[in-house]
Image 1 (cartoon, rainbow, N blue to C red):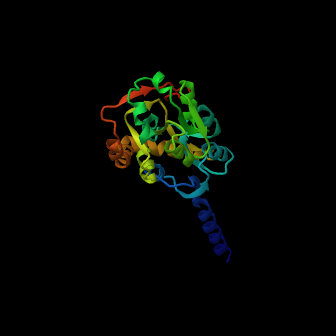
Image 2: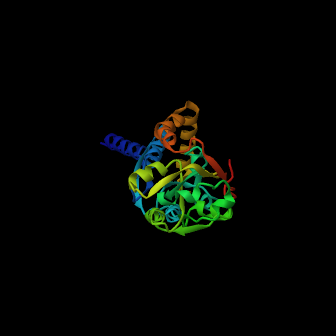
Image 3: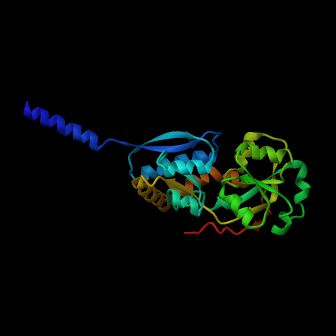
Length: 267
């Protein structure tokens, strides 16, 4: 009998030792685009590459970047992704691998179709400064535009920013090459159009951010992403999701207005 009890205890301890942990990942309550699906798949593949056994569960969050990062800092969620900034890197562990390979800093301009003539002769930042952009009030991009003396109207509601352009209340809405095609297709608005052959560029990066309470997850992601970069899987996945989208953008002979970003250090 004593031997039987001892064997039962051993089995119990073994099951406890190999219990799979749960990783709580923030999921914004909005339509998901290919950029989101890419990030979910990249996360899964990186964890598999690192042989990090965990169960991923999604926590519904409001599409409010700073609020979600604050929840991450409090340990209410374990992982989120975002464009980086010095403030954001204080709130959580930034995995400093640019998930979009720098394309997050290439910004196409969504404009009202009727206002296309306003942009025909724009070649410089000074000329663009005569017009007004719209951006999220808590986005790093808002501060970047303001630093470069470009008038920008900050707003808290994501959907309302598209409406502001469609109604002619602002002149343009900068959106990254990564997402602009999906956003425009989802709205099917005849009033909105991607401005052809002109875009903004500033150095920036989009990272995974991990709760400081889960350093083992951060270590696993660093390892997994590095392995994917080494074996080519990272580049293949990126091309699978975005190559066709980039080719579809009207940027064959594009003019580029380069901005400074004092809130980013390229590591």
